[in-house]
Each structure stands twice: as C-alpha cells, then as structure tokens.
Image (cartoon, rainbow, N blue to C red):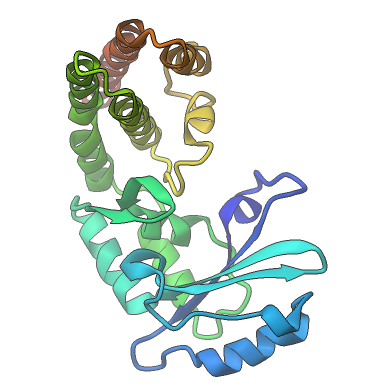
Length: 260
C-alpha cells in the first residue's frame, strides 16, 4: 500500500515514499526474499538491509529505509490481523497510547485505522485492505468521542505540569509539557473534524486549516515557542491556557450543534 503524504495528496517534492507491507499471521513476510527484492532496486545494494518482524516495536513493527533513484523509500510492516483487532476496538471507542521511538507524543492506536483509511492499495489481490476501508470510512462516532475524551483533559493537565516545573527551573520539562499540550490540541481538532491524525509531524499546521479549528492557531503556537525560547515560561503557559480555553469553547459548540 502507498501511505503517508503521497497517499493523502499532501506531499512535496522531497517527501518520502511510504510503502506498507501487510501480512497475515498465517502467511508472514519472508524477509529474506524481501531483502533480495529490495537489493534489486536500491541505489546501494551492498548496504541495503531489512529488519525482522517486530524489530521496530509492536506498533511500527519493522521494515527498511531505502534510497531508490535518489528517493527515500520507507518499507513498513503491518500484521493485518492485529490491525483488524485494533480497528474493532477503535470502532467501539477504545483507544490506547504507547511509547514508540519516533513518536514523541506517543503512538495512538487509531493511527493504524487512519493508515487504512488513507492508503492507496498497490497490490491487494484478496481485497483485504478494501474490506477494512469500509470499517474506517465513514469515520466512526465512538472513535471521535473517545479521542476527544482521551485528549481534551490532557491539554490543561500538561500546562499545569509545565507551570509546576517553572518554579524548579526545569526548562526541558516545561518544553516537553508544552509540546504534549499542543499535540493533544491537534488530536482533539482532528477528532472534531472526523479526520485521522496519522503523524504528529505537521499535525498542528494541518489542524489550523480544518473547518472546525482555533483562530490564529499557527500564530499562537509560534508565540508559545518564542516565549519558551526567551525563557518567558509563565507567559508561554498563559498562551497555552488561552488555546485550551478556545478549544473547550469549540468542542462545546460542536457538541451542542451535533446534539441539536
């Protein structure tokens, strides 16, 4: 499957090519054959390698980083049986967050569902992905509610933790809490708009362009980081509190409108 920004139509010329390789437990990937195939297209076959299944953790699973004709191509493994089980949980309004290198906000289980919703099948002879797409689209309302419930409260919680760290002069912790607060803002905005958030990178910028969003979100976010860079932590938290206030008002309005 073609995934990432190229599947979503938001790629720029330097964007990676993300290729999802889905397999079943009954018929797992033959990584030795995959390596042999990868070497036939890689710019530097001698240094080309692929990982065993599970090498990159339970959520990214494994894959390869290739250069093909000067283009960065990432191969990413997915166990379709595990994906289907996670999607069933998401449809029921159950989501999880796990630590995953490369995802400083954490890996939200709904990412797997979003990958299915947004990917473009390149080779799906048994129509497995086509079947799962019908479960991912339209966007499930229990998932929308679960993500708002899971991340809305954490926006302010992270701000309050940042404010506690100011008194101890813990710059890194303040910045980390600010990042987490803003990442949770993006999660709520994507859920309100019934859009899948697949990667934190660029999420706030995309959230600022959604139909239901916060006015001047990009400018407010830049102001947070400018103030943190200047050491004005309390002022940065004030801006974050204003973002939280606007988000709560937007959520309340959207919920009232939907119920009406």
